[in-house]
Picture 1 (cartoon, helix red, strand yellow):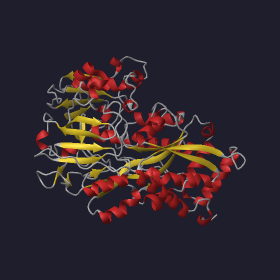
Picture 2 (cartoon, rainbow, N blue to C red):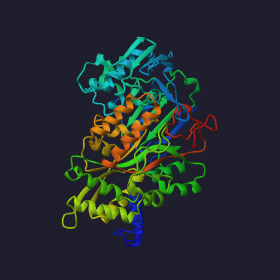
Picture 3 (cartoon, rainbow, N blue to C red):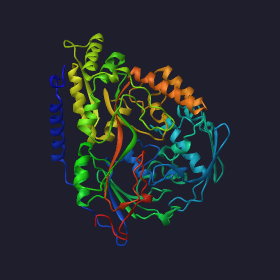
Picture 4 (cartoon, rainbow, N blue to C red):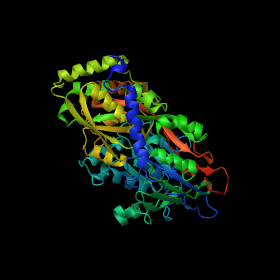
Length: 549
């Protein structure tokens, strides 16, 4: 069947998507005007896509939270302007010959209330995030530390966690297996310290403005839910003399089209997303503002294993192979995204991208014919159509491409209903398995294939949204963890990815590019593969005046 004969032809898809985008833009409220900047100070107004759920680094999960918290807290390492791991609270570190024992030597630094930052703060913090009572959804990322998994699963006391303060300025961490990427992970908020003396006194209230004590370049003074989070320069930060911007307001901007207008008017100096199909237009209408770069990220659909239909691998495979990824990336998004038939993106350090499944080379017509055959074999067809709901984020690109997925599935006889949610609400639903099909995205926490593959590990917990469980897959990841030879380790990881792709617990859609809209007068914002931009490096080209003024 030719493209023109499909159930919903390409033109119909475009019209459907265009109408949806127009409707969203028409209903969007007008954003606030630029607030005044205190005299003699430099201020930046930033669009941050979504509201944070929390500013507690041990309870956060979203990139929109990371963009705030990484300016409040600094871990053992920090990101430089290009997103690379550099010394943070640790001035230097050493690793034992077997790669298992890491010793970090802390710099002289204080919390924003003047209390010294010590190795005991890190011991307290790592125990806190792994404590089952904290219920951190990200805790499993730290299972690479010896004793972390049994402690987090409530099977061992906290003292079994192999982290200790050798002295106030020396921290020792013993690993369960070699992890040469630990310095990269150490700049992720799961390894950020929290102020022991404040958390023990105030409990959960420590994160409220007025109570928050930071060790980074900024502290939080205001948080108006649905409006803004205000950060002000921390004069006790160890490198405060080199921090240029005095105040930053971060706003939720789920409607990127409205946000781009606010950037153009000077109400915002930047926005952390761009609707992909507007990139070419914005390059012409706002020269110098559009910033895109290769990104370690993947957009995918997760199938909930609790849904009876998705217990059948044939159903999952049919849905996966029937999606027209090239239409989504080349006709709808047009932002440089690449169609994804594997889960780990290209460019990951020390990893050769896995071979795509055989069907990836087939024509769309052949793939969809095979998908219909698989569904019929599984018991679904015109007399018994498969009816499912796709829960998706309301951020720019999902609202653009989800109708296309819906149309592709209609072409193979599947009745899919779309349910749009605020991004943080959608992810909260995914973590408690309140979905059938979940539209999700994952950005590398550190530059290693394991940062992606661990998501489908049975021990991962809330972030293994579909509850995929294959002992063969888990065993291959375990072999990779225990393998000191980097090349052999990469082979085990690639074999694991092949097993997972054949099972099809997820449907990769496309690999990301990062997209930012930044006023040219903002300096120190450097595009990089991990899309990490610490505000401590920002400034304004015209010294002494606020950008956009």
